[in-house]
Length: 236
Image (cartoon, rainbow, N blue to C red; front, side, top):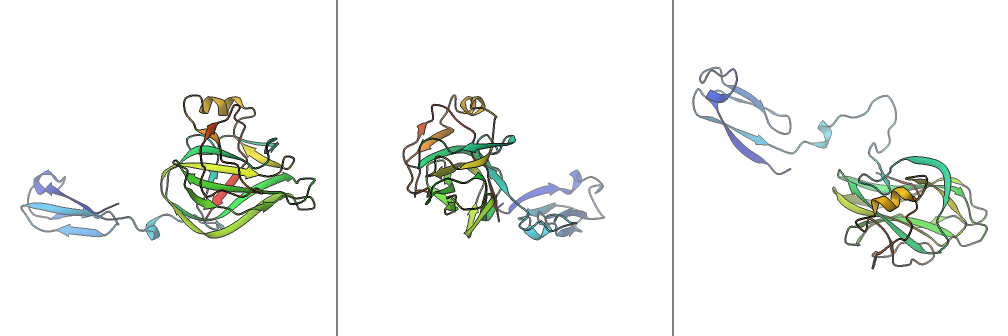
């Protein structure tokens, strides 16, 4: 937040009595300031709250502390289900889900949960984050979901990407038609369809290649039936 200044007449400051005693206040970064003048005004500067002043969780290792889910809805993830969800019948389809990121964060990791791998070789999946206009901001790289690979949590680590508050598209794609993933959202397509009833909040983008993310989303087309998105946790 940029520094801002405003004036407080001493006569209007509780406890000042309009003179004597001085006025005590705090700047935006928590630094104490004191004015000892008996007349005039106090200039208070609001600075940026330093990250070191934020509360730090105690009692255990919280790793990067911050995180968020990719998904659909105003704040991404809705309700979590343990039922597996296949990616769909169309290989390399990109599914885009609009959500709002309410805070700034730098992320380096993306984790998905593979419930069942493919019966075929050379099968991959990936997730990405794009601006509301379709420009790619974050790319997880591909997760191997081929036959013989393990199931469970899969985490990819990449170079840090700094994000600011705003609307983003969470994008999932895979070239597999039989691998399945844990998902978030509703237990049927109805919730997703309602979310997109009056806007292109869930859509299909340009087809991907070998389950990898594209440079941009390309032209978006509204999905006929909106299924629940595959889960992904983004972390520092």
